[in-house]
Image (cartoon, rainbow, N blue to C red; front, side, top):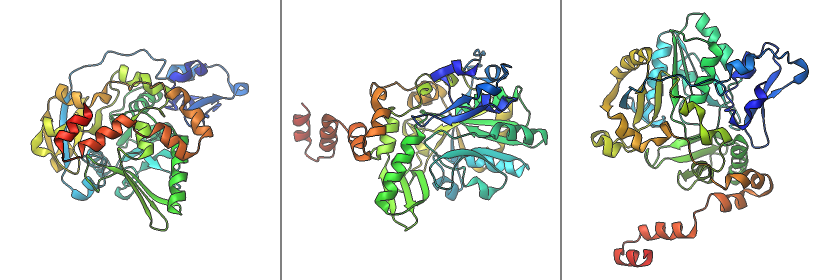
Length: 388
């Protein structure tokens, strides 16, 4: 029974979608993460859920050879509204131009959750563009992908590595017209935490959110911030290193348990293409150090290569050294460390006010604050003296 997976479950939902009796539902637990809940009275112990679970599958041998690229979309509007260099938009545009469809993560209408939807035109793609820092609920997405493939349509499916692994396990075989593009994943923060944060910000703004952007580039790609616009047109904007929600996320205190030992990363790439930010571009390829973002692309398969070559005609594309890029993008293959604070975080989320939670988990320690203040001082001798 799939319940034995326990905390190692990545929440991909493959078990719920494969169950012939529809007796498995993905249900949010008290930490705000989706886990399979089994209706025991309807279960016939067919074993389909265990066979499809990517966590229970043995790792297969992976080809370690791969080509790495730096990518910048030449469309400035796309670049501004993308998380990094606009690679996803190029892949999605080409898929739709072929008469295909695209599956990706989008906010719900009230911005309280993220779920996967299907886009069939360029207008629908706007909802899929940009990072969403919480796990997307795949709902009935896997059967919808299979249906489109059975219609002989091109399908681009984007998601985290564990979601790609779940889809591949659900389908049971590769499809010539299916292109899977995963994102370099730091980990999945709690949807419960996000809702608490959103409620706090909406109260401060005095209105309901009508737009959320986790990667606003007003101050540039490297200094991106969170931007939330309320219905009264008041705006919350906070730099990435200062926004409480993102600080908790980057400090790893609010992640799903499976993210601290991500099996999808341990098993290697299931995707055709991997997308992410090319952090360290100023050292890797300083001539394209774009202030609006540079994408890091890895191509793993032949069909991924053919699609990438097609879209590269509308982008600035540069070959880069994989090992050097990996030094600045370790989340590609490494899970994050589980901090000790994770043991108490969610009990505190349940009982503390947002302000107290922020002070406890999102503020710098005194020494860090002092060093940050010193680093901005023009009096270098005083800086060195105080640091000593």
